[in-house]
Image (cartoon, rainbow, N blue to C red; front, side):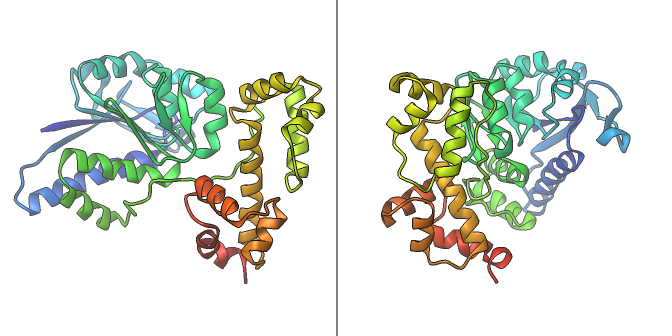
Length: 324
């Protein structure tokens, strides 16, 4: 019997807690229907016997407090508010999570739950995923963690993280497969209508630049790129705009934004291309030229790397909303 501990954290998203619980209960039902032994014992675990969520709208009574859980097999951290106050309210979870991990428990964070997991130090020097909209803040708050805004799931030595919003379902199905088998995981994914082959959240990402820094020289270059991305931009020209030496500019740009200048230009161009594909009926080649590329293969390769799909696939996905 595997013991699952779902954390009922302060400022957690209650719907996610309910979905996690429902998924494991449904999996147990499927196991029973196929005459397989029950595998999961699921507990809602909190710091107290009553936890107020959604600013007092909901009250949740956890099954157990952390003091009552001597050992568990899997800890699941739900999405929660990433404000400092929220993380502070949940700080008493941190030593317990670390202790359970050292005892052999696996730990999974869903979406913004990665912020609480990062507070434990268990993610240091490891890759993790979180909601794409929070990655810039995450990089600043936890510089020792390698965060990705594209991967849906990361796994490292029994530590799992998921991308943003509903992509946490993909991690939950992945964990079900780990604990049961592929057949049960497929059955559960069909029941909840989850696309289990989805491994990239790049198609949903909106690149807004990396402004969580105070380097005015780099802010100036970012402004220039964002207004002239469709022109022929050279690193030498950008270094001149920054009033920094060439190597100093490259180093400070990477330190400030967590991207090279070339990567930043590519992300800005792809974001512009996405908007055109959503809103206009221009041929793909015209979109390519509009955003500053003149090599079709290079444009397609960079676009697919950033979004996970080719430009035409992206248009087909969103044309109902953007192109009449």
